[in-house]
Length: 214
Image (tube, rainbow, N blue to C red):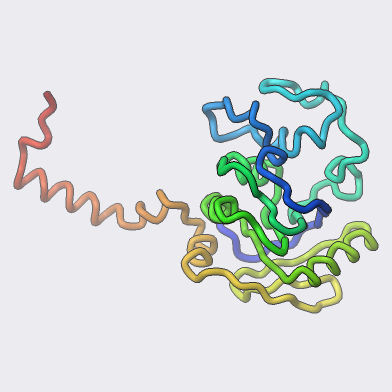
């Protein structure tokens, strides 16, 4: 998992409340048995004018020019600004996969659905919760200034605005530790790989029959 320390990126505004996971990555794309390739179908029903299905060449599709991610001023955005209850609906982990694989590193919203919020941390995304009035002001600034960027410092737990002012945010210490180190659940376990190997070697010395297969 990619570590998150300090990130500066352009902001894209998703100006809708209650964006559910089926809107983030529609159900037909969940058929894939791979954990990659979902970024091209992020917000598929809003992003394209033609129906989407797995295996399509994005270059042959019809983009919706009115959708925020298709507007030139938001190309290359890596911070997604959203309204309350982002990520509601089903618990599909494909939603944070699609957001991450599109190129977003962090999200800012007043609130998130619990399962989506947890899945973000497990996949290297930083979901930041800020008071609704602060999020509303960020929306105003993003719309007012082309190329609007934010700097997110996870160690200090601040979002720094272009004028130098900072917004504090909370993050659970264990989740912060995992993001700073780039540790997913497997990565956390592999930190103890030497102890695991030593335990297995000692166990086989005491119970060698466990190495035999029927």
